[in-house]
Image 1 (cartoon, rainbow, N blue to C red):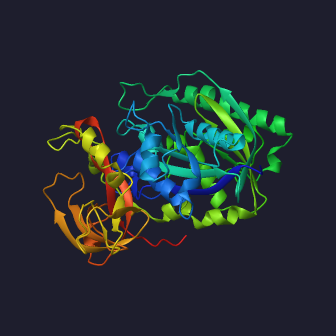
Image 2: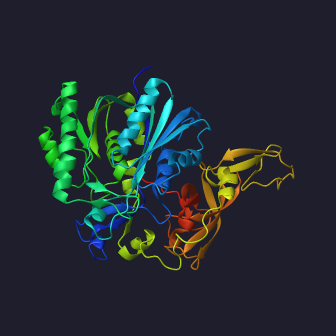
Image 3: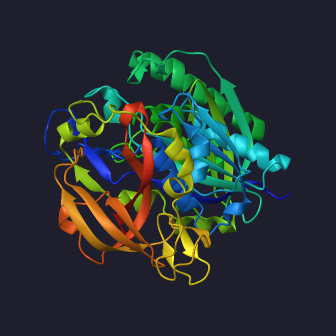
Length: 477
């Protein structure tokens, strides 16, 4: 087996950016105040993971993906595997191995290590790692200003590898610095100086020094230090302590544009570094959370292919400013009212199981006799009237166009109006879908759309997922 590493990668950053000035009490952004990425009301760790995973697998034979690892600290369920749900939404084959890695911001690098081990051991040809977080923070708190929502995906394999993982070091540490229990609604944190000095700095510096000693390398041998940091300032002291130039050798940490996105943060920074790198560059990648991980990553000639994916830069360019803090609180369901999405009967497990190929994998049906495509399933083809003679087809990867639309101001949407459309999918099937990440002013007939996995509602304390459409946005990056 050859080198094992990243074959493909992609990121997902929600389109909305909340002004940090709005968190501080202002309505509009002030010069230099910065912003953070926020998930829309129908997004969470699962939907963002699906978006990143789908972009990462574009052009890849999904039958070759043998394992999926999902890293997150904010997955909605306490007992139900997220990786299995994501595998279904990505339409991976039935025998794919799935696992959740959770409960620490270090989960992203732990998942990558598990994927590397699986490929090296030969138990998987390719392993998909998806990391996503939308961590809950107390309103108007320092944590809320530092946090951000995002996802990233890496396809780990041994063929056509763009970035290779070399030596690695891991440390475990028992410390109560940042945490959230089963009964906590928000992430909690101990005193900042203790968190940074005794938790973050001590552990990540020790891991980096151990890796440098193990490899016999020095900071001068690396292009950049790509490292987790709890805030924008703390990385500078770490860089100095291990010999890196803080101005030229530290990867942009994206504070003031995205924020600390938990388990996805260190992987997102690595993805950002790789998509702008060239052959022969070497990165020291480090992560923190109840200990620390440090790895050496070097690029190959195939690294140029990573820049063609929907990466960090594409998503940084695709943004919509958002300064209404009250609406943001509503998106987070911090102002429960008559339309509280946590109420109601909940999702029917029987219906969910019966329709999972259509609802989660977004499968349509093609008539074997006349080729007509339709959604949802009907026993009789409406074109040639053949009965029970269909093949299932995946619609999620296709584009579509708006055939009709309406604006519903009475549907109880957290961001009215609710935009409801009829979409003609490339191939002919017509689908009734909500539109997301769009304003009423931009919707028009024949508008090209793509499909995105989102929450439809959250009744009974359980999220219900389906697909929505969103305008195709051609972003230059």
